[in-house]
Length: 310
Image (cartoon, rainbow, N blue to C red; front, side, top):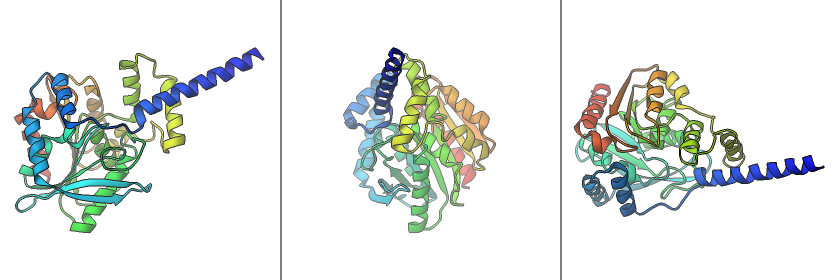
């Protein structure tokens, strides 16, 4: 009888710990203010972010067109559309990262891609911003949302040369989407500091931030997440999708990233069987490759776009 009591207590304790972890890593949270974001970036990178503040102000002045669609699982997803000023070269879909604001991850990238003559679609990922949802999908669910946005744009505006780009979880979103059946007008994928799978990044953060072993905590949380959110942490991996995509891929990562290990982009590069490039930015922390890399970053992206959309 005592053994039974101990087993029941262990099961209940495991369930409680798993729910705490699920809430901590997978559920929607109230977003920070933009000023809090910029202050955090300055602390994280040890650099002035005046350029990003200026870029954010520019974007807000453009008054991009709001757009909405219904996701594959019935959520209302929101995005903003910013057409090119002159003749358009095509489209770029830009995806932000985990628990981030659009302007936290994309402030510098939005005016940069726009200056190259592309129409931009900038979605709020599910469970972020003005999009519905309570559970974050770590790219597993969001890759399907990406496909939905592509089809929406083609149906509304007609086909056009299209590129997918994202930062952090946004990079994982587009790298996972690269393995889906995409419209023929998609020309390439750009992933900046993406992780390889929910399992990999949650296990890494469990060890690095919580100082706890990944097993059995991560498998248990994954099981609870499957029951509540409909997917498990091993359901999709960029390593698998890049092994089968035929799209050209540009991978970018900061060499001092301590949130998503740089090694994950190296693994993605090794797994990719299509035309591929890898750009590592020295002294760049998580999400800071554009700011730190400057002209090196811009030149690599511009060259990639021009090569695959001549």
